[in-house]
Amino acid sequence: APVIGRDGLLGSVSLIVPRGSATPEDAQVTARGAAACAVVLAREQAAATVRREVELDVLDEVLDGALRSEATLLQQAKRLGHDLLTTHVAIIARIDSTAAGPVRAGGSDERWDGLEGSIARTVTTRSGRVLWRIRNNSAEFVLPTPDVGEERRLGVTLRDELQGLVRSGDENAISVGVGTTREGIAGIRRSHAEARQALLLGRRMQGPGHLTMFGDLGVYRLIFA
Image (cartoon, rainbow, N blue to C red):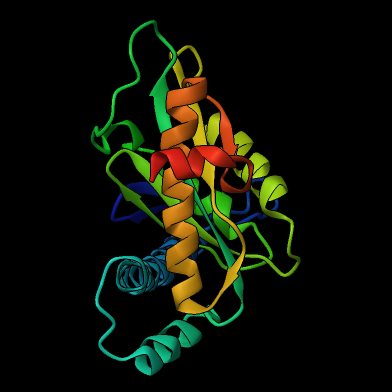
């Protein structure tokens, strides 16, 4: 019996019985089981959607908003499983074209269309919870870092995972900027600004498809300023 959800076919329920012994009651039980699965999955999808919306609100306020109440924001994040007082690093990834031509600024988030679900599945496989969003053709991540100095490894791993999500055959590459590990909400904001600067300078100096660490920019940070 098919399990039908909001987005179509989600799977099926099978009842295994001896050959030739299936009864109308067996078919009815199987159909009811499929309907029950559909209800449970619909609830889980609704809960995941609400959670995702709340996480986006938290991340937007951390990175962009004027904090109305830091204590309230910390409590809200804590209920979602995020401890914003611990060390985090911001990583920003952008899908760039590797075709010949100048590196363009700006852009839209259309290149990420259809990849949100895959990104969500990728980040949920990590041991620590990850806050992330799509903004202006960039995927922005805030990752917990229990060990200082893990920025490069996290950046390389995330870049490789995202590159695997980009459709093969496309002339696209993942450009990545990585901030430094910092504590607290103010530290997350600063790491985010560093990642954005690293991405911008890395694309201008090396072209698309490279990973740039803010800590490796050296004097270029002063020139940029």
